[in-house]
Length: 111
Image 1 (cartoon, rainbow, N blue to C red):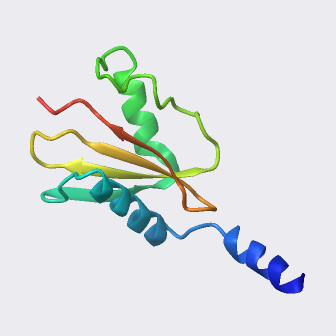
Image 2 (cartoon, one colour; image 1 turned 45 degrees about the vertical axis):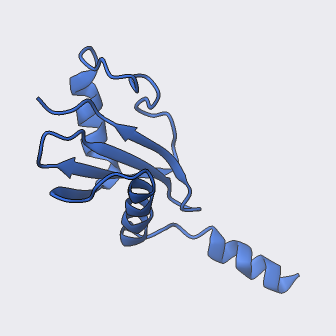
C-alpha cells in the first residue's frame, strides 16, 4: 500500500512548462500539423488565450467557435502555436497535473 501511495503522489505533481510544451507538441504532430515556421509559446496563466478570445468575441466564424470557451476548465495550462505564414494558429490545453490533452483549438486562417 505504501508504494501505491507514492505512485499517486508522483502522478499528481504539476507538470513543468517544458513537459506541457512537449505534450502539446506531440498532440499537434499527432493531428498531422506541420511544425515549420511556428513559434511555440507557453501561455503563462492563459493570458494570450484570454486576450485572443476577448478580441474574437463577436468575430470568430470558424466551425470551432464556442467549443472552447474562456474559463471552460480550471486546471489547465495552455500552449500557443503561432504560425508565421497564413496558417491557422493552434492552442493546446493540457491538464496541469495529469498531462492529458484536454483540447486542441485551431483558429481561422490568418488573412
